[in-house]
Length: 249
Image 1: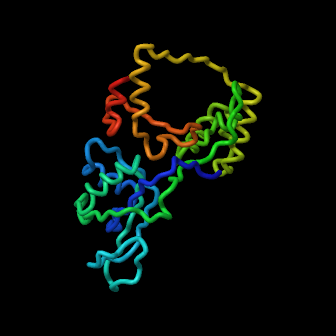
Image 2: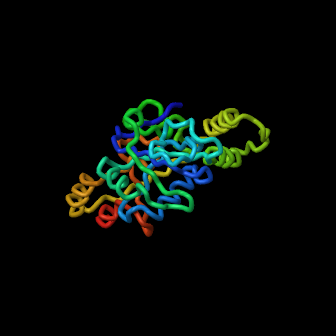
Image 3: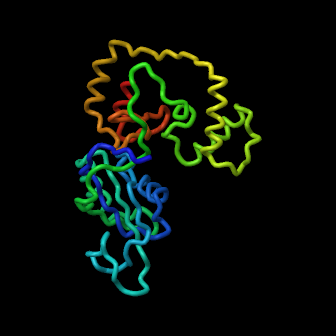
């Protein structure tokens, strides 16, 4: 399947001069986390280039440099998207020239125009569902939003439930999924209706006002969701950039 696009962005920055051992999304976000402004959420990593250019004394080194002094260590760079342009401007002022990890003094500039636009994330869902209809069985069992090891874990869980652990461990995932779906067609799962909790009427005006002024994430917090914006708040944890919204709730 393809990718889901977030809202158009003019808030993409280029962070450069990254030592190769730090040039991974995890290491980059860890380095930035301890040095960002307290009210700024971590930006979304759209692309990391581990071997971008060699270290030089030239201030002109950047995302398209290649031929420089032989033997100089390779440096990487990353494209980061922020919630909006004002936040990206704040990040540019805050991070440029700042030491965020041993060996990495960040150099920041605006990403070229060709990188400004839509951050690509996740996988597309099928066509929107008609009202009061359920997704296909395969989507119910193995949602498109599953990431990394979540799909293998879901397959293993349903294999046990369906009693088809006799399938070869080397069987292709799609074969396992089809066998599991066949089991559930013969033995439909029991539906358990669950009703949510209505928001107090007294809370609605305040909540609506706060939602309207919320600076939403650069990309939805969950992929595969049919929503223009999607935000997850964590109770009992820091929600940088969303403290005011959580206080209303």
